[in-house]
Structure formats: structure tokens, C-alpha cells
Length: 289
Image (cartoon, rainbow, N blue to C red; front, side, top):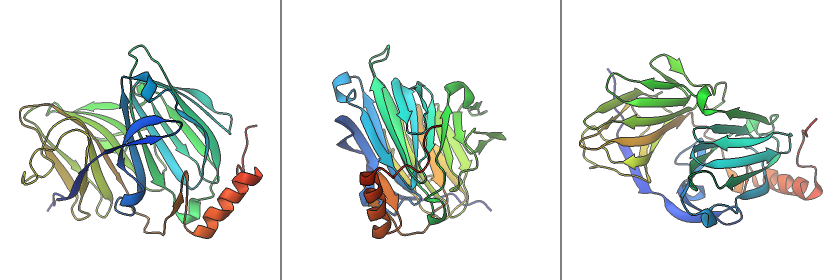
């Protein structure tokens, strides 16, 4: 018999500043480790004021993690040390595996609507893959399938499977699910999740019940809902208003986390090696051809 997961905790994202002065909201980060293992951090950047985002994220290193950037609205130019460069626009996803080390930059631009809205998620890599060869996936909006359910709910599938339709991001070590879900009023949405996997939702717009017993009350935008690990499905219910949220899950690693800035390893010694290599300009193991 299926068991619906209960809510473990709920918290609201907090304002912070990153990059060269980008104002954003942090859904979770360093202080929540290891509550959301294998995930490390998620930022919500949402602004109609170019002065809050144009400074962007100039050249910086990453090692030991994957960064997933999902742009709902706006324009972000990017470039990295492997020679990749391009533009992420509304509905696009950039899934970058930093692995052994990469340098990159992400620079928001003023688009037609003068606003930016998106999310960046950091996922950890296990010790066995911290030094894997970097790889990069640039997914355009048209490559991300969208499924309309009989209930009226709409699901964009970055990774994972809904009604037999799978997202384009596969072969990721933590076996992630990344869904963008929109539910009309008066609808129940039920989704099966893998036992033991970390599961959370982040509300983009609207309000809904994320507890089937409705004990938590309605939860609204810019809140994160973390579920208990027991159970094999989640259930979300709306009443008189629509709801949009991200549903994300992954297999926990259960390994030590040593984290400093943009680099995440398993020990302090590994961190020291990484920063020494960065200073010595030997950090990037694979360069553009």
C-alpha cells in the first residue's frame, strides 16, 4: 500500500547577495547541510530592477558539484573554461557538472521585459566522482517535455518521468527528479517518489496544501517544503487558487561535506589542495580544445 510522505519542515527563503552584487533569495544553503543531501544550495533570483541583477556572476571556479540553472524569464549569457558559451533564455536549463574543476561566468542581461526570474540548484557529487571529467548540458525550452494531466495539472520535466514521459537529463549519479508543476484550483496532484530519496518542493506562485491532512495549512510562494524520508508518494492539493512549484528529489550520498565558497569536497585537505591549485593556475584539468 502506498504511503504519502509527511512534511518534515517548512521555511521561507531569505534575502542575500551573491556574485558581483546580485540581490536574490536563498531557499537553502550551507547552514541546512546535510538536511537536503545530496542537494547543497538553491537560490531564487527574481527581479524587475536591472540594478539588482546586472552585476552578475563573473568568472569563478567550481569543483566537486553540479550546478543546475533554470531560467523562467529573462536572458543570461554564460561562458566556461571548456570553450562553451551561449545564452539561456525563458524556459531553458543549464546542467553543468563541474567535476574536477571548471571556471565559468553567468551574466544576466536586460531582456525585452526587463526582468529576470530563475533558480540555481547545487547538487553534490560523491567522493568517487568529485574529480570526474566536467560536462555540460545546455537544454533549450523546446527540448524539455511538458505533460498535461487529466486533472488539468501541467508538468515540465527536466529530469524524472511523468506518465511515461521522461525528461532530457539522464545518467546523473544522484538519480534526480526536477519538475516544474502548475496546478489549477480545486485539484489534487499525486506523484510517486523513490523510498529513501530526499524530496522537497519550492513554491513559485500561489498557495496550496502540501500535507494531505492539511495540518500545515496553506503554504505560499518563496517557501520550501522538506518531506520526511518515509513514504513513496507526495500529495499536493489546491482550493480556490492556482499553484506553481518545483518538485525536486535525489538519492542521498551520506558522505562528509567540506565546503568553502564555490568548491565542495569531502575533507579540509581536499579543499586546501583545490584552492592551492586555483592559485597556481592548475585547477582546471581539462581545457578547451
